[in-house]
Image 1 (cartoon, protein in one colour):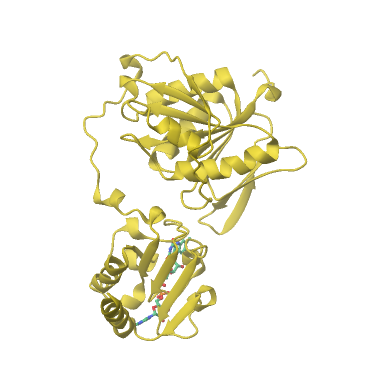
Image 2 (cartoon, rainbow, N blue to C red; image 1 turned 180 degrees about the vertical axis):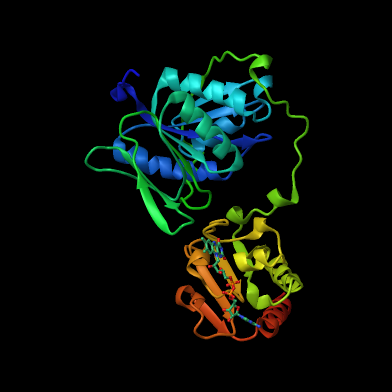
Length: 336
Ligand SMILES: Cc1cc2nc3c(=O)[nH]c(=O)nc-3n(C[C@H](O)[C@H](O)[C@H](O)COP(=O)(O)OP(=O)(O)OC[C@H]3O[C@@H](n4cnc5c(N)ncnc54)[C@H](O)[C@@H]3O)c2cc1C
């Protein structure tokens, strides 16, 4: 195969994933991280937006720091399909030649990125938790947990472009919004026929699963095995409701069948960074901490004073959660 001239490739692209006209939250994180990479490299940060009726997202992307927004819009792009999105994006990449391309490690990103990478014959690192530019050669160093999280692997893509990564939602800092920013809009001409798309979307159904938005929550109240029964989550939910937060859990609680996996925080669950994380009856295993230790304030409620969760907690309460939580709830009631 002919060698690519990698010097022709410039700029950093973020895939602006949207669903029904709403940007997926990870896009704001990708723009935050993309900005840092673009600044180190002295390159531009751009976004590629694909869909239908998505005009309103262009100023939003610019306000979060996209300098150029490449837009492919049309009926055939209304719903995500691997075939259509791959074709449109691959054509754009071949024409414009970005050096780095970031996608969220969402269901859509994880489906799309490998297809694009294999069409382009380039490298892709999935589910990255850290990205940095190598000062010596300007390549991106992509770090991700491997072998069930037992090692962290740093991966580079030396000879092909773009260097592609999917990035785990909730890990990177969000871009700051500034509505005074200005940017350029480039409409992509694309060549797509209905017969290019082998899947038909009959209906888009929002499942209960998606409604748990742990990554967006400012407050999370999580329960673990210390609850002893599935019913314990009613108490966790009551406290979360009082605080306007959402319910999280440890993996052990999920494995016990007490709560849906969508609530799981940790290395193999969701990574969260809320303002307040309350861990109730969670021991603080390393795999749990990996998903929540960056929270602004951590409160731990645990009957064991030696539980490792207290090592990361800003405030710790040693006691039986079935006594402590009702007291917290009643003191919130008395303030109200
Ligand atoms: C590859 C791999 C990936 C993993 N990924 C994840 C992950 O993503 N997320 C995750 O959470 N785990 C993950 N785990 C599992 C992890 O190692 C722990 O087993 C799990 O986090 C423990 O959950 P827990 O804290 O709820 O339970 P336990 O460790 O059993 O802790 C229960 C805690 O409750 C306390 N307690 C008991 N009774 C009370 C009471 N009445 N009041 C107050 N406190 C009480 C106990 O003192 C104890 O500290 C992973 C493991 C592996 C090997």
